Length: 182
Image (cartoon, rainbow, N blue to C red; front, top):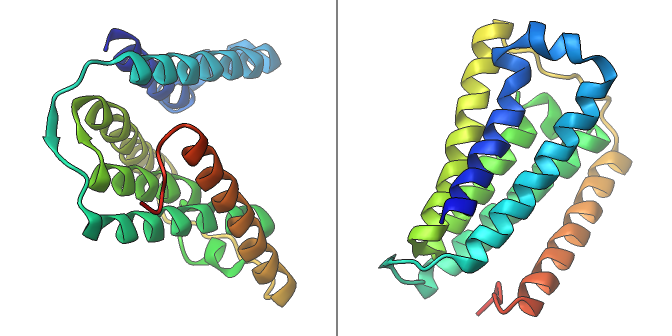
């Protein structure tokens, strides 16, 4: 569990560094971007290995009723990410679409995974995303939403990208022994 906890803390710390220590981050310059990327990559490796190796206590089992809710929340999270990248309307409605996507994704996984390793991983990432939103809102003041130009092409692109990401994620989950529809 040490790797898992360390990975979640490193992920959160690397992301929050720019917000809580902007002067130190600015002093790093462009080299800081590479450093942060390496730290984030290391955190993903640590979280993955830690999650796989964790001996866990199960607090609640997977309930069939929650599988559908999980899939809908994950799909919506993927849509928020895709929509924010292509300038879909959702980017003008939700201030932090990518962090909201992480929160939806983490909550979705907590619905169907009640073991202690999942609570640490998905709960930790949920707390990080919520904290990041609070810090950004406090620093930036009023909400600033982007104003995407309405376009059916952008909406269709967001949906197509979402379906692609969801399909790849479902396929990879199946390969790893975590079927998303069963």
